[in-house]
Image 1: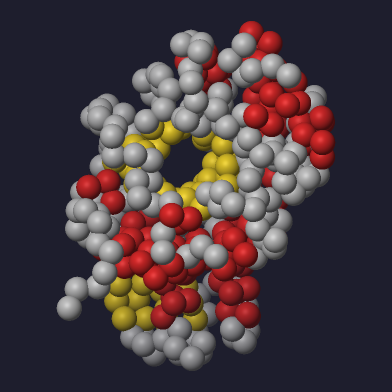
Image 2 (image 1 turned 180 degrees about the horizontal axis):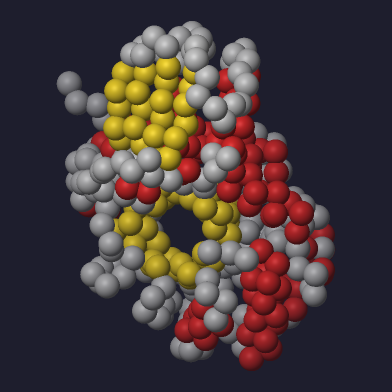
Length: 375
């Protein structure tokens, strides 16, 4: 029963391939796929490790956790030949990096819940496990706040006017991620990228009035969604209030929520995870880092992206550790598009995601930037 959700997921995935199955908690004879929690040894990140054993009569997936089982299911689906057959194999596997993320900017260009789910499905298939949603921007604030409905009013948006995510939308996305063992990480950018906030309230976030409003917003968000992580941005802005980020982060941490900020950026207190976007940052061994340097998909030639990411050594090391927990590819789509599908057509989202999944799961790679395939 502990693996009912994973069994249901596998059943639906097989059904989509024309294979009908039944879920049974007993050990039936005949051709079966067995999912079982069992102690499994691994040298790294044992909570995501799995063992997949297949022969002519049975496929068995064992793991320490349901997340490991889910990872094994993805491998099983990839091994299906002609959607019906799997070759005999014996695989024990685990990831090199704990944080394998994908970020989408919906502030500049809105994306429907359906399109976001499509991308989350691809993430699950490739064993990515963090979905980072950049919700607020200069262009528009996309997260509905009950106390301040004017934030998402059409007149305060410059693009995709009136398009935003309500409470049910966010909870639907969170549930969809949870079913796929993906961490949902929303971002409320502060104090930069906040022109939409200023248009609405006619105050700067760093002012006393702005801080008071922002704390009300954060309280509603944290009370409503019960997050594990909140990204607070913090980059590309002139800091006029030296205490701003420290004060806001302490407010969030009272809810026992882990904060993340962009780096380089404003003055982030200890304990805040840092997401690297530039190589200029000096790293601290007591801080946890997420590597997004040279991983902005909108900056990449579509044909170059697969080569570059596939050969890239994430975090400048072969696998993660306590300080270098992983990496994240980012879709910033700065320019306006006519159709939300253009965001996937005009940027190398799925090819890059596949290459990134290989490198973030397997580790290795080479330091530096590889732009062409060697002869």
